[in-house]
Amino acid sequence: MPYLLRLQLTDRPGTLGAIAGALGRAGVDILALDVVEHNRGGTAVDDVVVDLPDGGMPDTAVSACTSVPGVTVAFVTPYPAGAPLGRDLEIVELMAEQPSDAEQVLASAIPDLFRLAWGIVLDASEGKARVEYRSVGSPQDDGFVTPWLPLASARRIEVDPGWAPTGWSDLLVVAAPLSGRDRALLVGRHQTPPILDSEVARLGYLTTLATTLRTTSAGAVSDGPACAVALDHIVLTVGDVERSVAWYCDVLGAQSVTFGNGRRAARLGTSKINFHWVDDPAPAPVARRRVPGSGDLCVVVPGPTAEVQAHLERHGVPIEAGPVRRTGARGPMTSVYVRDPDGNLVELGCYNP
Image 1: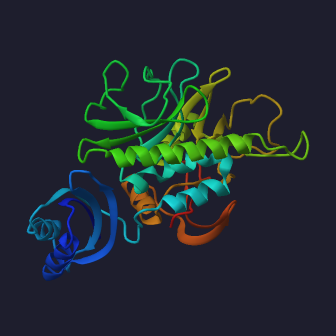
Image 2: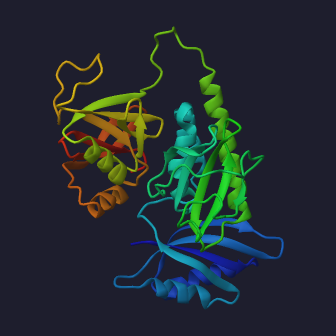
């Protein structure tokens, strides 16, 4: 398992060479290095991904780095094999490929891109914050108030019990404005390490680009009034609606939704799944043959695929097939297949394998 170390060091010639030498003598390989921040006071912050020797512990790499004068380790954490550093251009490319969903693409990429815990897209236009989209690992809280809106630019937000959900007291939070006066991208990380000024600035640049792409896409002219531009929702017939809602929320991170006359749904990004009881009459028109377990759908997950597999294992969800290469709406993807409680086939597709 590779590890990511965030180093704080004296910014002088030879320091990185001394770190590399100390790691080499300890049998630790450097897989990647990213200069995160240069400070005017003569210090720098670097992220280093290392591979430990067989049987080695992270303390080996930490001790090697701190043996170099002027170097401290802010934190160390497991890092997915092959996960790249400095992925800004890669994320820009993905946002440009699907501009109408650029904000959701950015929120999905937040954990890897900034080594944060999660990212969520909020809409507070109706007085309380509604989660439009949440990345894997995001808190399930919803409906909290947002006194810090509207935002002029990306900035740190003090976690205050007056607005934040219970359990957020140990989080560092940054918010950045999105399209619309009362919409924002909210990102979080536990108290260590601090979110740097350079990370706040980068987040601001990327959200500005995401907003521009989304706004430009929304203004595009279709070929006619009946020209389909997106998938809004699908309907699944199930044996137990609440069981299905719970599964999609717990396993896939969907948002529980109640609408109409008590109908239930699970929101995934900008789309949703409506559920019908198999034995209850449904409002017409409906599908001609409503049978539980006849659905076959694909949802996009941030990945990487190894983390998706680990997530499913933690939730006790067996993998039906995969990982396998597939072709999604925007190109090649790596997918694993699972079944929901009614036996519907659910493909989890990842564009970041």
